[in-house]
Length: 191
Length: 196
Image 1 (cartoon, rainbow over the protein chains, first blue to last red):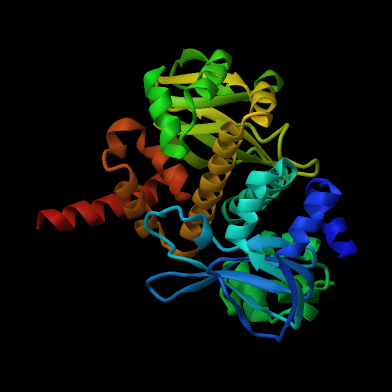
Image 2 (spheres, rainbow over the protein chains, first blue to last red):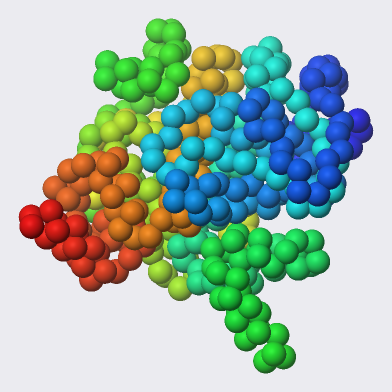
């Protein structure tokens, strides 16, 4: 559980007691590539592998919201139980490679945050970090064109093509696979 | 002050005592149209509870290109990201500007965090506000990737039906991430179709 402490301390350092209580609600699991993760009342801490979050709209379109890599801390929006207005009903997660993760019950975690203030601080910090990621994505979608978004992603994950399929990359940067292939051609053939 | 309590209670119920502590931090202010709520360094410690009018948050990229990220209307709470969650190598900056005359309660966010640290209900309010914001932003992202401009406009109309009477059309176009010309064509199509 030591590397769990390391991951948590990226957000906020917590006491030994809280860490013990916290680790009691966690189970270490392995999932195969393409498994869909349960999004009802679960949260996850990714130890190894690659996961994507995606949304499905009524018109059937599927868009990838985020790529989650090692030491990400995530949950779906369902346990937060906030009614959303019109666009998305839920966020789903599935594995893009074999993954190892800790999973736990989100409601149990919230119960713990009420008792241990440092866990509550940790939760706030991780929410703030999440908001930062979402705002960055919003900014990318609006200010950058397809090429800019691709370069930004490559900047974050230089070996992204080896990790996941090109289709998924295209979906994430919100271009068609044909557009992505043209973007890559322009970039790499000019070299 | 009473209306502010009802705004907060909608987010997360807080006790009278915590509310009294919180209200000591707040001052009521009115800002003129087009003035900035958060722009300069001195504003970065402030947080706002908007009770009347419409404001927007704007992102600006390195070329000076501006885009409206969110429209903020009653009731909403917001704070600058600069001191709190923004990291150093950010590719853009953010400002908050009034689109109409705006009435807010403003306070110092550091002081809020200080009193919230000892009061569970205030801390929960802060957490809940973060959660709500997160969902709102995820939705905005989903909106931008799933929907075309017309659908985005209809979505906004559903949220704020009389939006056209409140702010300028080119501000709406900017929020939808389209040009004013595209926006005018979309509205023509929707509304001339209805008349026939």
